[in-house]
Length: 150
Image (tube, rainbow, N blue to C red; front, side, top):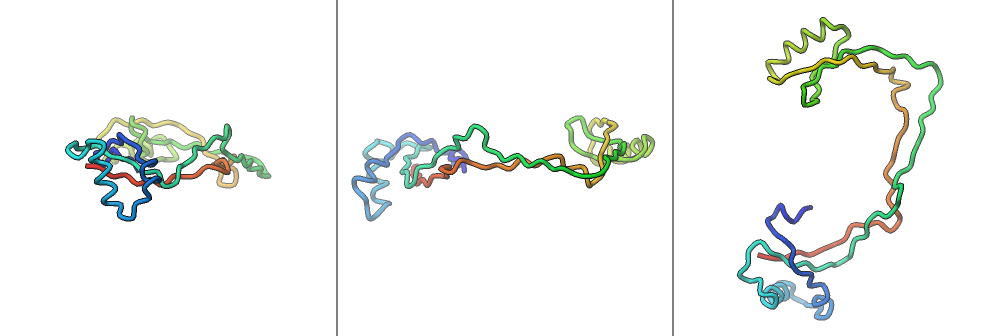
């Protein structure tokens, strides 16, 4: 979650003060820290208390590669794929004429320039070539933070 979406900018880490005082009432502590750092009249600024520090993923290759080996021959099929110039998928067709009709009908809805490319698709049994799974390092974790401000 980004702090900037709330209109706050973190200007001070008050974690050492929080650990020294170990306050019972957090609202009083927050008000004292804003006053101590002369931030009571400033808007859009915040202080942060780190409850649990996070640690970044430091692995050079944070993934697990799983190869998909399939038996049999690979069969391909030519398809005419219609997309907008912004690469938004519109439709696909088996023939060029059918693709032209679909593109003309879709123009009412999309109202953008379109392109039609010939692509080759493989059958369902052979379409998955490999899987790459994200595997972070063992010490990677998200931190816990308390943010307060004006």
